Image 1 (cartoon, rainbow, N blue to C red):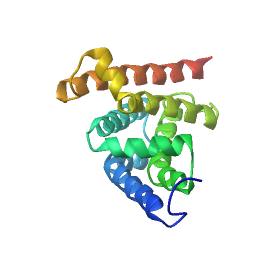
Image 2 (cartoon, rainbow, N blue to C red; image 1 turned 90 degrees about the horizontal axis):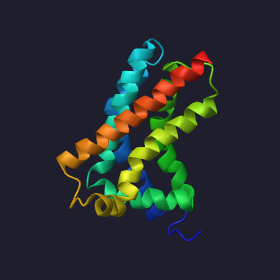
Image 3 (cartoon, rainbow, N blue to C red; image 1 turned 30 degrees about the vertical axis):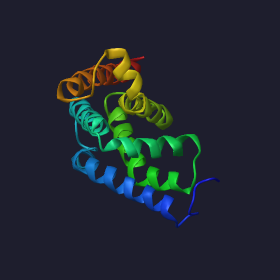
Image 4 (cartoon, rainbow, N blue to C red; image 1 turned 180 degrees about the horizontal axis):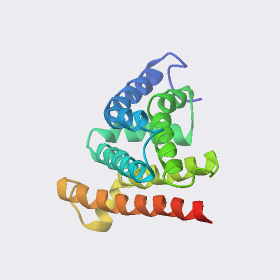
Length: 174
């Protein structure tokens, strides 16, 4: 497959480490979200989804996420056994929580796959600011992504996320 170490080597070990680090950073926001997942109102679900996405966006913009991003992109393009570790430990739990919240924002009857596609679209808009960092800096003229730039990005991601969540409510009425 081209990745060294087979299923128990250093490459898979790196995947475990990344999954643990991302999982640890996200559990503070995912934990409370999952505890209320069955009882919150649609408005509470929207607030929780926005908080999750903001937390995720902030994490992905941190300088220490750069090596994780390279690793994760490689696994997206050419999955190895490491992909399952990343998905199970980091990506899957975030998508599960966000999909559940999207469903609870109004369109409870929507297909599970549709909620997951929306969750991936929401997460993808945050990820692009890490994966396309060179383009971001060139297009904006920014020297780096510091506090002010991070806040600007997070505002855009929040507005887009609200639009998706509001669209979910509209779908439930049609």
